[in-house]
Image 1 (cartoon, rainbow, N blue to C red):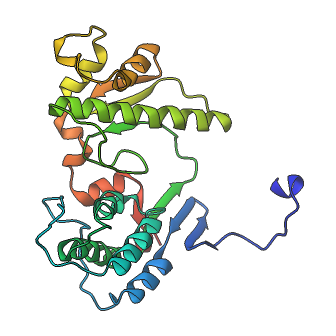
Image 2 (cartoon, helix red, strand yellow; image 1 turned 120 degrees about the vertical axis):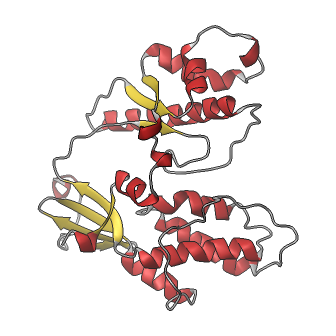
Image 3 (cartoon, rainbow, N blue to C red; image 1 turned 135 degrees about the vertical axis):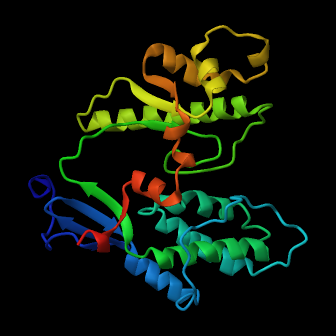
Length: 269
């Protein structure tokens, strides 16, 4: 179909492109970056490093660590750049990579240690990638959490919230913007999606969205953050609260990874 519209040469089935390995099977398509990960481990001298099953410690946070010993800025930035490219097929490391990327100006030993841990995790999961099953039912659902991965990126909140509910409410607005962008993009492909579920793990934030009355506790919130409330009323989204058992952030890491359709290709053969 593309050859009928554009001048192009047929060079066979796509199998490798810009570091992405593509395996097209009868029941779906698998995208991974195993070769690139192997090259990256060799580049940073991590070939013989001990592998690990998770990309981040249980505390899940880093600080500026001003008292720690500084490390080479050039090396650290190079590692972060390589890891950011890996997130094209590995959204399971997006949160931890973006966390480490915040400290590129004055990197310390603790930041380098957190970065090398991600590399050790990638060594443990070299064959893991994104699986796109053939004929799968398509459904667009948004998951909103103020401190977890929601869409393709994870970044620090650029506003101050006075409570957890407000932080979750603001995060819900950002998620809503992503959903509207995805709806517009999918419409170009002939997929008209009307009301998209937006699942939030904070009941107070859900009540703020459903309540059109501006009361004293929300008067100080910037008007632009009520974006999500407007689209809730228009019917573009339907914000709902998740039960404790359904919260993705509370499941084990491996199960969460499977929820993102990130699978180990070696187990599928």
